[in-house]
Image 1: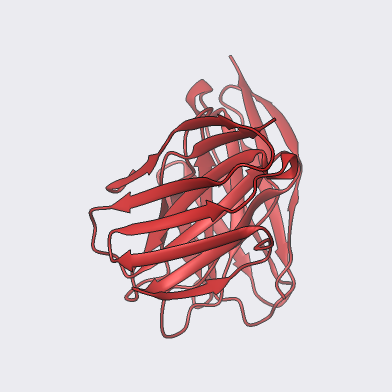
Image 2 (image 1 turned 30 degrees about the horizontal axis):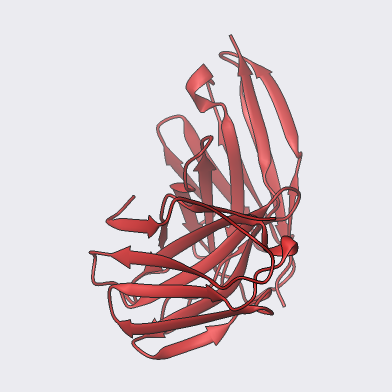
Length: 114
Length: 112
């Protein structure tokens, strides 16, 4: 089955700097890659996702890139702010005829230092 | 939280007792999922449902059962709770039209 590795497990950046979180996946059939942000005491919140027919996607300060050949994808946050501090999870799934279970990485705790 | 509620939000129970967690959605989504979150493990799939009375096992299904008698409710039951089932449990929902999943607020379960 699918295995998703996520690095680093913790990341500290100065406010205004960029943050990059990387994930690799094992199943070449995976075609959907979401990123979730989880604040303390809350459920994961979808912040951006990418599908295998796209190499890059941006939404304001957040971007995700996908390299299907190498089977890795990354989350990029620019101009970080204290409110970006949270745990971030990457995930992968094989979307076909319907919604399918996600396989998650173990998470990255991002701390933005003011 | 995309019209998803989980109850209870917190529960403390003793080893050997049965526990049922409830996920309720108002989105009329076909797919519902139960994941557990543990430090160092991320989120792992317990069971999921692809329609009323249609369920399947996930990666960590041992010790858990589920039921879905109507679209809006998905129940997770621990028949005889063990300390290894102390965790935070999240419900998620999704439609058949997209691959997106939305998560509920979670239930923190402690088994003493």
